[in-house]
Image (cartoon, rainbow, N blue to C red; front, side, top):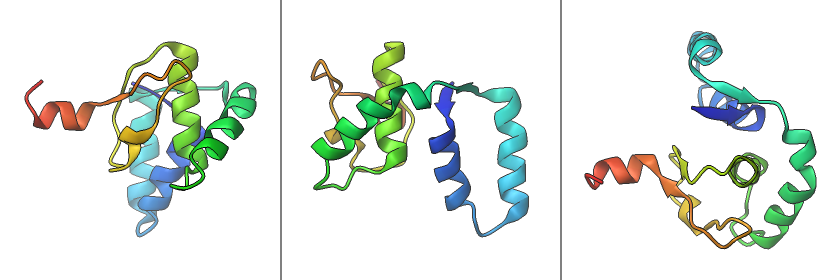
Length: 106
């Protein structure tokens, strides 16, 4: 699984109720995730995505994930965000949510 630091930051925010939960997640992430380091180069595209979806509003983590998927040619994400299905890549492709696909038996 591939992610980036903005998404990790959002997970840590959600786990803010417990430092133990945060550090356990980070320890797991070190061995389980490929943490993409190119977010800085994605900033121009992230800005475009945030402006395009300002009515949601699109947050930094969501926009950075869409940009990462575009750059790496990824078409499936694992997200708990219920509104993530509104995002489209620069080629107007909808990203599939692995959690939704799993529930539907796809």
